Image (cartoon, rainbow, N blue to C red; front, side, top):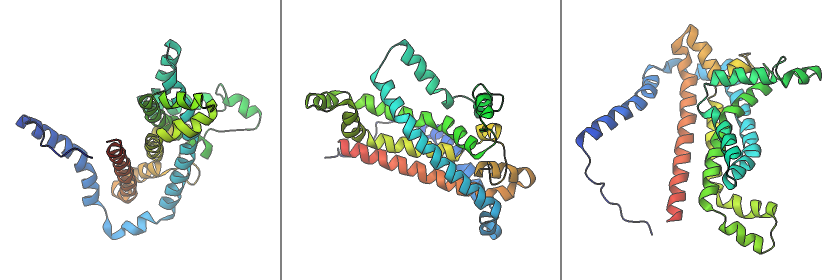
Length: 269
């Protein structure tokens, strides 16, 4: 049974004023886009070939990078949650580095890793494989910045559930792989889903690493954020319609993750 709602303890009046200023800082910019949007040509601009191609590419690459985050991120999260020590802590710091690293710096690092003159890219180039400034580069850039979101979500959940159920499964004869699939992952499924949604949203909105590592070729590497940037250079108002679409997608993601977490908390009670 959910506890009955109680009024919060009294707060100083100034906290409401400061909180209102913070809320205004977040709400006013999207509201300004809505108020300044050229509604007379909104549909025409959103359905233009450039906008549609950029949005399709963004959705395709973001979905691809999210799948890669799932495949790579879950094992990483489980290992980081179950093991500790100096080496693991150092590795965790590097895994979470893209969360605070300037995206342009991340893109430059990817370029010197997978570009034609990169430490890995030069061997790939010799084999006839060029990654930089291609759609594959877009996916890699998005994966680089989005992967930590999934890892940190799943790692925290794995730590919270502990090892009790895994130990019970082991005593019943389940092997490590079966235990992971049938016990651990179902227990952290809500956090895994939230991590996937956040990774998708981060990949969809990626700009800095993409333009540095993949470029801005229409139909090949020009994602929706890059298309907004190009449009804003010549006519800022022309960039608003596609910007609002991205705002709407982001809002849906935030509401979905928040609702899932509230349902998960209610179920735990």
